[in-house]
Picture (cartoon, rainbow, N blue to C red):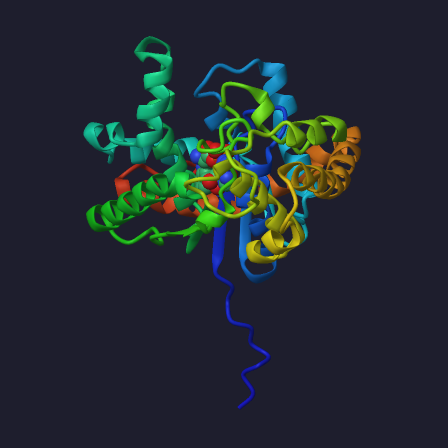
Length: 349
Ligand code: TYM
C-alpha cells in the first residue's frame, strides 16, 4: 500500500513577541525570529503580536498602534510568510481575554506571585506603579498558547517559566473539567542564541535596558548600528577567544558574528587569530549592517502601505479566530456557561 500520498499532520507551534519598543532588537531576531522563519516550513506555525500584553505597562495609544504595525512589518520583512503560517494581532482575537479570565480563576495567588519576571519588574517599578495586569500577564500568556492547542512554544530561556505555567494550567483544567487542552512543550532555543547588551554584556539585550546604546535595533539607520557595534564594551586583554566568564563582551560579539554568518564560533575565532578587538568590531559592523539593511528596507516598504498590512493582519485574525473560538466554546461548555446565541460568541450553534 502506498502511504506516501497521505502527509502526516504537522505539529503546531505558536509564539509571539511584544510590540513594546519602536523596533525589535537583535536578541529578538537571533533568539526567536530566525527560528520562527525556519519552523514555518516544518510546522503548522502560528505567530502573533501580543498587544494586550504591552498595555501591562503604560503605552501612548498612537504609539502602541504604530508599534504593533512596525512589529508585524518586521516579522514579515524577516521572512515570516503569511502564506505559510498564521500571523495576527492578539487584541483582534477576543478569545484570548475570555480564556484568560477562566484561567485566572484556576491560578493560585501564590503561584502567580512566584513568576520571576513579575518579581523583577515589580521590584524595579515599585508596588504602586505595578498593575494587576502585569501580575496576571503570564496567565494571559497561557491563554494565548492553550487556545491554539500547539505541541510546542518556541521561546528563549527567559520565557520557560511562563510556558511551564501554561502546562500546569492545561493539566489542571483537563483534570478538573475533562480533556480540552494539548499540554504544550517549551521549545527553548539554545543558550548560544542568547544575545547580550553591548554595553553590559552580562545582561540580556532587552528593550527595558537602561541605555539604548547597548541595543541593536532592526529599524535603526545603518550608521547608528555600526556605531553601536564599534562602541561595544570589550574585555581586559587583547586576545580574541570565546569565554563567557572572562570575556563576556568579546564572546557576545563572536556569537553575533557566528549566528549571522552561519560559521561556527571556533571558525570565527580562527578567522580573527592574531588580530585585535577593533578588527572584530569593524568586520562585525559590516556583517550586521549587511544583514539588517534589507530587512529594514522591506519593513519600511510594508509600512508605506498601511491598508495592505492591516488587511493581511485581519485575514490572520480571522484564521486565528476559527481555531480559538472552537477551543473557547469547549472550555465554556465544560465550565458550565450557557451557550450564547450569536455567531461571534463561544458556544454559538
Ligand atoms: P518578548 O517580547 O520579551 O521576547 C520575544 C522573544 O525573544 C526572545 N528574546 C531573546 N532571545 C535572545 N536574546 C535576547 N537578548 C532576547 N530577548 C528576548 C524571548 O525569549 C522570546 O522568545 N511574554 C512574551 C511574549 C508572549 C508569548 C506569548 C510568547 C506573549 N504571549 C505566548 C510565546 C507564547 C515576551 O514578553 O517575549
